[in-house]
Image (cartoon, rainbow, N blue to C red):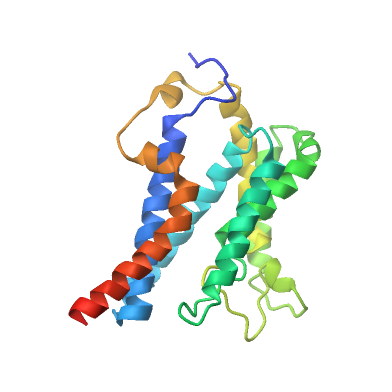
Length: 238
């Protein structure tokens, strides 16, 4: 049994997963602030286990953004809003007081994906649904392998080939993440059409869905708050 399709309804399970990814992102960024500004041990922010889980939950967030694109009235408007926020973040993070420039972080990536999908949706929708996931997974794996090999060229950092001297405190290039987003749009079609089991649409839990529904706002305000808390802690206890 499946729930009736309703392309405008909120689905708590999707919001909960997005909320979980956001909470873990906030914790990760707080660890970064403690390491960079408070002198905490580096392993608190980066170690083999954390590095793996960081990309798993970032990938989940990108995938769910693709799913949500099936519910959006206008992915182009959505993408432009996220792009403006991404550009503001780039400007702020280049300020001397922050000194952690973000050139192409997750918001930059998502804004591109939303705009790209909004402009090319009909093309991707022509791919047979039985073939689309195989194609996207192959592109994810292939592009991830491709960017592991050095390749020189101006602007290739946009796709994942970084040159000496390039730095972005938050970095999510188009390869392979664009294809993770597109995989999400494929899955989102089934969600929007009400083709999944009823429990998927009726699942509910406290806290995480509420965070997921406000994920964009949380992303915008969490780092200034964390930075302020770290600086306050240094003034009081440093």
